[in-house]
Image 1: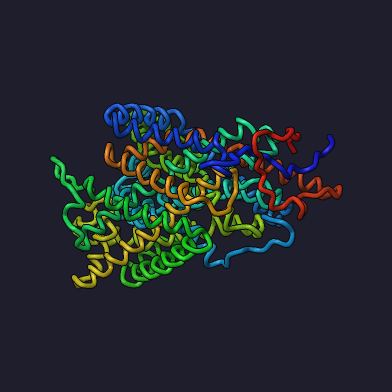
Image 2: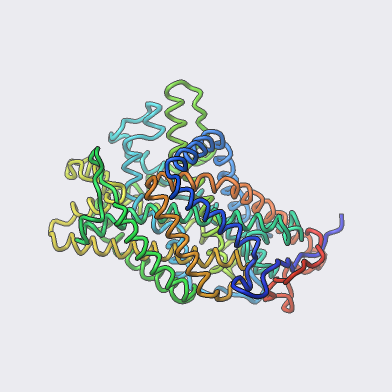
Length: 572
């Protein structure tokens, strides 16, 4: 069978004048309408929205658990194969002369800050605490809840959710985008990564649908992350004396952010993130990423020195060993609830934790993947996989080991007296550092550091998301966007988070995110298949002397057209 030349042009129709000049109207308006309808529905009919979204959420978590488990395991396998496959690993994400734009420190800082940084401050303490009390090993009677024999299990399950599997999903999205944008000079947008499967048909409605789905998934995925972060940010502001009005107590005595607190925090975060987004990746986002990496190192060093140093080391090394040994089984096991009460409990736990996380990472993947692609031009596939999967995973493990390990050790040893267990998810890290620091002044200063660190993570995630959404809407054009478009998506993201938090708390955001992630999970599977096909065909093209990258005369084209579509070209 004859091998066809690579596709180096994928025209996408954009507006030639007016407010949307340079933007794809099909993608931009579709995503705006979808997000707008969600917000209006949530605000105007909160009870109905909560009920319907909840029913959809239950249906997806019940009926698509096997799908999510299978596709995430598939992503891990694909990444390992691509890194180990000689023909793939040495390929550069760019033209032959391209070299990385950012040094390794800035590269890792931006990856970690945009990818998982916000979640670390909440879940590095909270999740091991949860799993210390209950996890599949406890449910099956193989370990004791809150017992010494369950300590390492808490980290094994935490590492599952924040380790290789999560970052493999991001890597698949990033590789697909970078490979076709920088080697083929195609638009830096989701549809380009599917050209080996669908060819120039992606210039039309199929491509518009794919990009619109990616934009919606991005907004909902980032909203999930910001929702967790905003709750913790408000908790921190209250702790450093910003006022009791930031929090409220319901009839059952549960403490949560007040409506005024939510609106205040969203205004601060989205205002700062919009200003940062206006400055671009090379300025605001890089500057903020370096700041939060330095503050993260400071906080982590504090925990490693003054926290449970040796237990943290045990949680890190033994926990990783247990995780790697159990990973093949954990990655593919689906609890279907068929084994009586125990089976139902296992299925409920997996739906609430593992399946929810897999949906979250899929929804977050277009955002993180496109951002990783933007900062990874010039790196080889092997370098990208090792850098984007293993290094951030190890950073997550370090955080969980010493932050979560210190929390468990303090509770297990009796020093905490339930203070960490009883705190809100966002407040657990403040409760833990208060116990480690006896002086009230130093406790206050540490709380300020954590609040600043949290804000830089939130701003980095939000401004990156605004830039990514505008890049997809502008047919992959990475150039500066008009201020109104950056401001619109900054405001829209803030309104989505605020509206969903107000009507149903973090649960409402979780529900919307799980629903939005499902269609994009199909797109991601196709991205992985498309990438494998492209690399295989490139290896054959190399043997017969056919070009595998766009020539200098093609690189840099905008791939945008006005009122007509160019004649379709065949798929690769």
